[in-house]
Length: 347
Image (cartoon, rainbow, N blue to C red; front, side, top):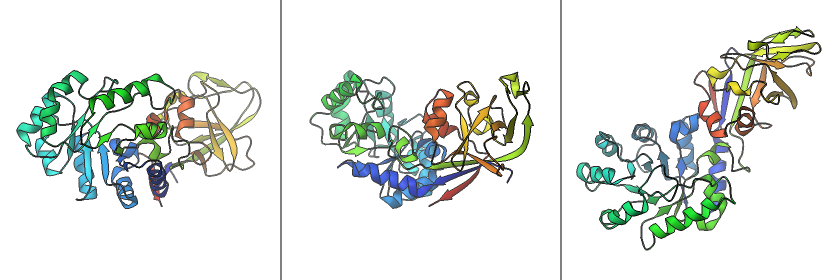
């Protein structure tokens, strides 16, 4: 095997969706933006539809068009970015539901697609997307008269359950939507875990489907096995990799494996922390020196025989472990996993 192999467990994704669905009385949608966080939106969304998901969320109209081609009719595909200039034909053709974020978008929707399904996104304090309270107050009556399908907002700090921002946004969203008879949505994965008052009518988990925090009970979804190209012994005083950042203090057996930052394995995982590692049958194998573009060097001294592949992602360490080593978050690791891998779908 010359390529690293990324295995994606579709059954685990479905099980994670079902587990999150059981936590609420709301309808559970699924966020499949960014090609299902890099794991393949067509395959993932079909699996989730079979599990029972009837609403999906994407970031861009183009993603929605591709998803409609994969799913066919019968599901709702919501677009977070709303109705952007020039998108009317694509929105109509793929029967997408844009989440309207501004006065400008609302006017564009009514002028180009009168009667077509849409939703509303409100800014409850994150200051990223959505109508602010004053803007919404001015447009509320006209927007509601056109029967939006959903009113949503997004939590900024749901991964920190005790953060005061959660309660502040809950109050803001509740105030802005008081008295409306439109389905409401506030919670992604973190919001689901905050409790029933955050659930409203529709939840929209994303990272939790794919095995990432804050859903710590999620089943692992991705496995990454990387082939060993070469092994060698390094003697005391010798260095490994670019910049001579690691120097041997004793004789060490090293394996060079075929993956690197061109495959989304972040360069910062190199021995900046000294804790990044591969695994083989329960044995921890530290990364030595810098992660380079296509190659990583690994201490395999603990193994009597070096196998054909070493595992970076699997049951014993996931995307959040890699993220901690690189000083980032699991989302970035997951969405960065490159196109060069041989991809296998299980389940």
